[in-house]
Amino acid sequence: MTALDPLLGREFAARVSGHDLTALLGAAPRDAGTPSLVDALAQGREELLRPLVERLGEELAGRASGPYHAVRCQDAPPPAGSPLFTVSGDQAVCDAWNLPRAPEPVTLASTAPAAPVHVLPAAFPGDACARRAAAAFVADLRPAGPCPGARPVELHVTAAPYAIAHTPWLAAPFGLFALACLIQLVTAALKGRALPAYGGLAGVAFAGLTGQSVYELAKEPGGALTVGVPAITEWYASLAVVSTALTVAALLHNRRWPQTTAAAISGVFLVWWFTWFL
Image 1 (spheres, rainbow, N blue to C red):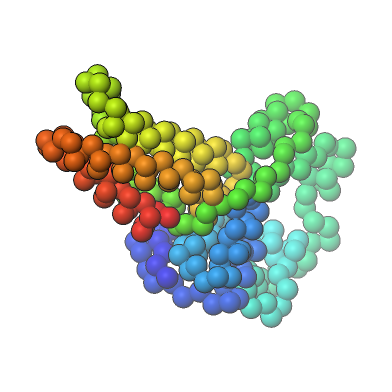
Image 2 (cartoon, rainbow, N blue to C red):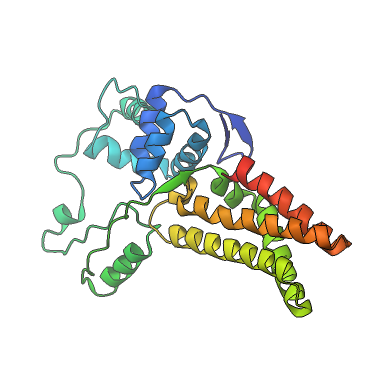
């Protein structure tokens, strides 16, 4: 598979074994998209490996290796003989450093037993609730209320949102379709032409509902959007099909270039949506 090197900033070919996949899943945050991710990987959807590889690569590259291994090797040495690269790398460093075990893990509770301790959810810092809880705790050492866990979400598995997040212009067909439908709705309504007006309305409704569902998923803690989009978007696509059908039907009565352009944009969008995005 192809992934982005977090240090060099360029793509490289990565080979992921079964042990590597176990390590990637073990290090991945548990969020609303985890069940769908595991099912999709079991079905051979290898395109979903890239978000896992790049997310873990960024985490490892951003880690201060010296302080991390100084604590790791003394407080919780990795188990010997592990085939997982996330463990074997730590083990190699710990074996080379040969640091003595700490008599007691260095934690806030051990150094200041009377100090309050607040455990943040695993999704921190990507979870807004966890960030608010951390800010409140630092401000007055008062634990905030519990943060709700990630709600299971039924997803349509696709790697397109992750690709768009890194290369926004890939979403150009969606934006162009939404704009064309809006223009068609306004111009046809002003001219009293029902067929293209309803075609534009269906397209605008599809774009609005799809955008709202994706936005709501993006607010969930974790990275569910790296796995796919809400399954309801598959049903919303029927509005795009209706919009295209009405636009083409309107073209039979009006073969001028604006209607021809709208029909062409709609057709290209459907091809993009069903063959690449979904």
